[in-house]
Every structure is written in C-alpha cells, then in structure tokens.
Image 1 (cartoon, rainbow, N blue to C red):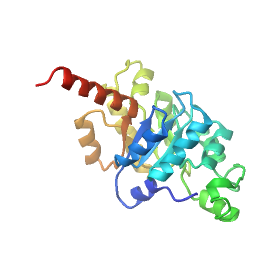
Image 2: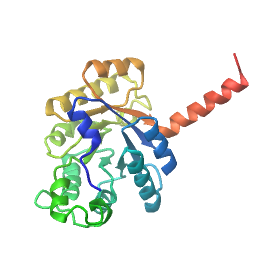
Image 3: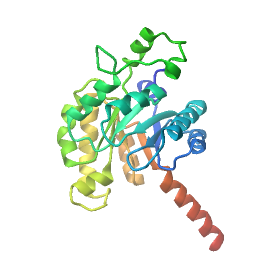
Length: 256
C-alpha cells in the first residue's frame, strides 16, 4: 500500500541511506539485502531480462522485509512507469538520461492529473480499497519517484535543466559509463570523471536535490562524507557476491 518513501524520509531527517543494485534476480536475495541493513534496492531492467512475475515477487519480498524497491527501466516507457508504480515500486531510476525532456516525460507518467497524465487503478497499491482513490491520488502526487542517472557528457550538460524540474527525487552517478562516453575507457577512477562527479554533486546540492554517490575507493568515500553527501550506492550484488565467493575459496585453497 502506498506510503511516504522511508528513503526520502530518512534523508529529510538528516540520516544517511544506503542502496544496492540488484543484478541477480531473486526475491530471497532481496530479503537478504534488507536483512543486511540496506535501505533501498534497485531492481535492474536495463541490463537484465526479467519477467513481470519475478519483479512482482521481488517487490513483495522488499515490502515484507522493510526495504524500498526501486526499479531501473531501460528507457522512458510511459506504460511501464505506471505499471511499476501500481505494483508498488517506490521510485523509477532512469539510466543514461541526456535531456530534461526525458525526465519531464517520466514525471508526467508518474503523476496523476493535474500534475501529470498517469492513469488510475486500484488494487494492491491502495490496499485493495483501504485507501480511497482521491486520497491515493493526493498521496501519490506528493512523492518524488523519478531518479535520473547521469552517465554521459550530454547528461552533464542537461543536469541544470533536469534539476529545475519539480519531482526529481535524487540523482545517481554512473561513473563507468561516463568514463566510456568521455572516451576514457572503462576507468571510473579517471581524474576527469572524478572532477565531473564533484561538479554533479555540487549542482545537486545547490538545487536541493539529493546526490547518490557510488564510492569506488576509501578516499572517495571520505571525500563524499566530508562534503555532506548522505546517499550512497554500494555497487551491485553480482560483483559483491562473486568477490565474496572467490575470497572464501581462496582462503580454503591458500590458507595463511
């Protein structure tokens, strides 16, 4: 049933939030991520083929475990945005955003009239009628459900216009794709990329929109904290799981 996002409630109260990109489709894993203490999980559809039933089970698992389910979609798909929000996704992550128009179309799809053009439905998001449709519309139109990712030079140029749009809940950085777009190779730690990320964070801070960092070194993490950044992405579960499994095997094969 619709509620104010605990993620944004924590940020408004001055607390930090931590999220993880989910690249291993599994409701059980969503529950494990919640049990580990994360506040939001981004269910990825940009790089994965996922079925509607599997996504629905993951959203339910997140709800039962107390973690916010966000959905990263491959492009601005008006119908998909509406269905995802109807299903209970708390936010829609837009990868490789390169214009304010893209974000505006997503916002229009996420909000009900008079703020947008989203179609109405009851069902589970209203508690099967526990929340009246007028109350549901009022609650939904007070959310900030659209989260753009800036991953290209065009996205950097468009960022000021994007931040001026009402309803943008947070901005995520995509340093790896940004490095590729800048012709720097797969090097998210390149100095030019690091400089771009700092400028991105400064623009978000000036606009009053949370910036979500994905620290790739202890030095970056310390720098972000010193700058007052309180939203963090811990990478993706696939890489973390693989590294943990590999490290455990190495500890058995080559004990100290």
